[in-house]
Length: 352
Image 1: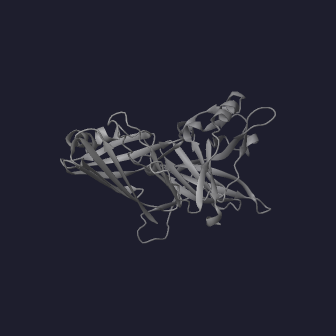
Image 2 (image 1 turned 90 degrees about the vertical axis):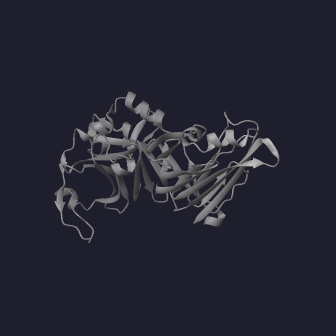
Image 3 (image 1 turned 135 degrees about the vertical axis):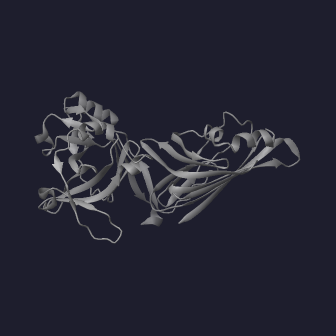
């Protein structure tokens, strides 16, 4: 599914002054609120390559775009990686008034069933600098824009739940363990995967799990994401890493928990982390196993996002990984990854 949004704003500044800012990525991006990271990857006289990451609560979402200043009054970009989108910004004279300009921004994007956020400039009529930039939300098959007041609803929606950071802190204060983050796990990889032949005409090599994981009838591997998804340099803490999700099926056929494996691609050493969710209890905050299918995962920035079939999207900060003091209380796992936030999936009447 593709869509297009066009925004027009009048600015009380001459065309040359507005164009100088609007067609310069360095100055233009300074007027966008909510950017987690902006990184110029490469540039030439006419083009510049940028990685643009938007900060949406615990999420960083974005893509790599090629920007071109095609004329003194025009800036265009097209995605080369990540969410498919293109943008065209044009600064035009406003009628016969040389003291005013009109800025026209057109954004085209494709929806792939996931959640992608793009920001369109809603330039204030009274001034250029100090302008607010409302958000254009594109989630699953629904979208809305704060610029026109309309909210088309097409059936599938995501709604943010409560943050659980305070519960994680309470559990740590209660002595459940110590926050060690991803570096703590990388220093303690205790399992060994092995290279293996895998099918596929374009495959160079593959690996298989240690024997007990390979033969397990309880744990089933699901989603895969890598350090190349997390960071443009394709390494995290100097290492090439893979994260894999699993779910456990009990003897009664019900979900018995979910976990994440951290694999070092150089050594094929790895370790499992139990996914847990912080909850209130009469004695204070506790960590309990998360029971989701974990069929898909995305590692983006410092967060891991886990798809829970029919249960929404669960997000965790890898900096929150905890080394627990009593593994027996966590199904035998020494390390756990607590969920920080959740997006609930909703259907309206048209989406049933």
